[in-house]
Length: 264
Ligand SMILES: NC(=O)c1ccc[n+]([C@@H]2O[C@H](COP(=O)([O-])OP(=O)(O)OC[C@H]3O[C@@H](n4cnc5c(N)ncnc54)[C@H](OP(=O)(O)O)[C@@H]3O)[C@@H](O)[C@H]2O)c1
Image 1 (cartoon, rainbow, N blue to C red):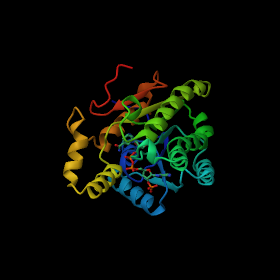
Image 2 (cartoon, rainbow, N blue to C red):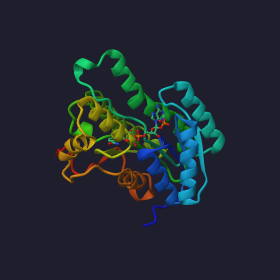
Image 3 (tube, helix red, strand yellow):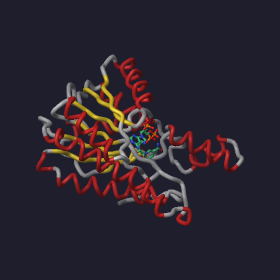
């Protein structure tokens, strides 16, 4: 299937590893020109080299921390220097903090809000003017989470903030229609990335049990009986970012091995 994005320009934020990296790779494989962003210049350089080796395509990168307004303003200027138009924005930054209500003070709530909500707000703001210039209409795809559809215990703060992101997708999807921009979200279930390898290692140390046991506890609840792989999330992101989904906006699509099964 030709997704119609050959030669289009895409920015993937949170792309030095994990799901964002796989999104960048899949977009390159579909013939898009891809720019990547995350905090560490060294890791971005490595990721760009790996993507270039894998796809034979050039990749530009810019280091910015989305929790810092100044960094994202610099990203915006860089983006405008690179290209006056942008066709696709993928925001793959965010994450969860495992904590119970009593363990979360105001600072912890605000820090997670900066990361999950304001980080995405700033990235969209930085990309909005170039997206308005996309010849066939801009597309924004945000990485949400299955959590808001089936709130996980111990993940209160990200359940709340990721639900806010999905509300943002549904609001902006309408607000941006006059600019011919579609806004959607892909909501992964448990997907084996650095986020999980670190979490499993931390819980294993904390509880004094083998990592395999911790991983098995989290796998147990997944109907497909395994964690997802980042390369199983990326195709849905690219599909929503393509012209094959030209009548789809305001949606949050689960890619979660069946973990969140609510009817609404
Ligand atoms: N993995 C899962 O099970 C899962 C489940 C549900 C939802 N998701 C969502 O999917 C998205 C990607 O998750 P992932 O598992 O692929 O994460 P990951 O493996 O931890 O990768 C995160 C990426 O974001 C970058 N990053 C982190 N903090 C940043 C910041 N403040 N500013 C800019 N870049 C930053 C990281 O690079 P640097 O460290 O170099 O900045 C890295 O490239 C997130 O929105 C996450 O909430 C993941």
